[in-house]
Image (cartoon, rainbow, N blue to C red; front, side):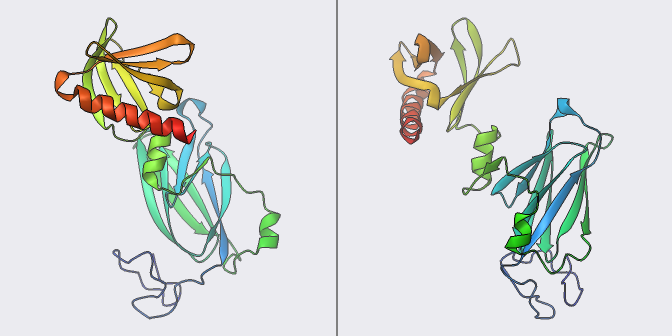
Length: 247
């Protein structure tokens, strides 16, 4: 990133909360001004691989299909944009003092996400609310005030609190217990069984196992190792109670 006044490269470890250039002392951006970010996802349509996800400041999540584009407003200042496609991610930090067009592309040969940032013509003066109301803007898929961990939970990318070898009926496998759900993956297959806590009606003890009672008289029963049984039972009981209380 370069200072828009003196043109010199800003230090890599620069705090994103600063509003003055450490090199020339001039203001880096005018707080409160609004600009547009247009993201064009290059490539052919590919529904099998799904859309590219775009996280903005770990507060908003957008999705864009290959061959299409999205547009959204941001205020002047530093913004972190994270692009994710398949298992690949790429983050860029942008000092917004203009409206930008960002071309994002998933390179199938290298397996990397490539981005190309360009300034929109005549876009340094910003955009007012009246002009903004006439623009066709993209609505975010998700909004989070709690940051990336909240997105990870919603998208299923968070780390489990517990990971245990268990049996469920005649199946052996791995039970991963998260803050909002649990996932059981049988050893004989890769397909996992996901159970959201909001669908659990009760938690019961059952001869060294934990019985998660769901609607329609459905029971998900998992054996739990003795040394951690009481801890896991307490965790599930408390978390499910909290989730049910928030619904």
